Image (cartoon, rainbow, N blue to C red; front, top):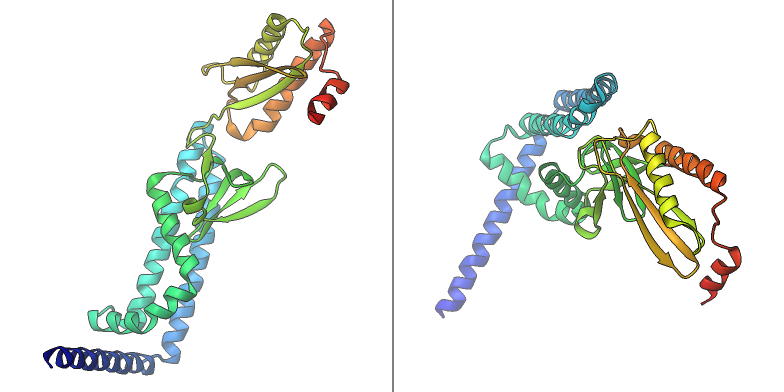
Length: 289
């Protein structure tokens, strides 16, 4: 008997709490006036303008100071955007809820379940974005790869990041990808990022000569950061010899220009020594096997 009585009391308490929450929510809705809605629109518009100004100003400053400080300045962007959005949300809550504990509980209790299902993915992206700020998985100016998308992070928003790809496309990637995809970061806040330039030659090629040519190409390129290691790696394949020239440009954003410069320098030297490339027939045969 006591068991059923306790269940009845709990059910009655839950019903009373739901009724109180509904009444408080209804009371809050009746306090929404035209003037408050106008103020809210002004606040939202001000937030939008502030975000645009922050984006423009940070990018403008970062492109006009010494290159070694460019990424450090750009990394202020997500922090300033987060502060601006937080202040805006707090101001809107204060406008409609007066930020009293009773009002917050009333609205939260009425909307939590609905918002939880409707904006589950959006909330996941926001949480991942906040985690990303502290973990530093990627920052503005970093060159990253998430899934099939690779490029420079040009914007860090509340829901996701915008990545400028080598094809000059702007791809928006939600922060929630952090939970399911691996994040490859080429420079992790540094100005330099390793570039790997690949070359293929026939089996009978003079490997020592090729190695010297590749080292010379890297040392003579005006883009090379000579203070960082230059490495030539070699591997034998069924159809020839595979060389990898690993070096660093002075600026990671010059990655493809740098790779082109290295390739041009190496090919000019290779042509002088008449070094043999893998034969097409061998490559086709290897593919068929």
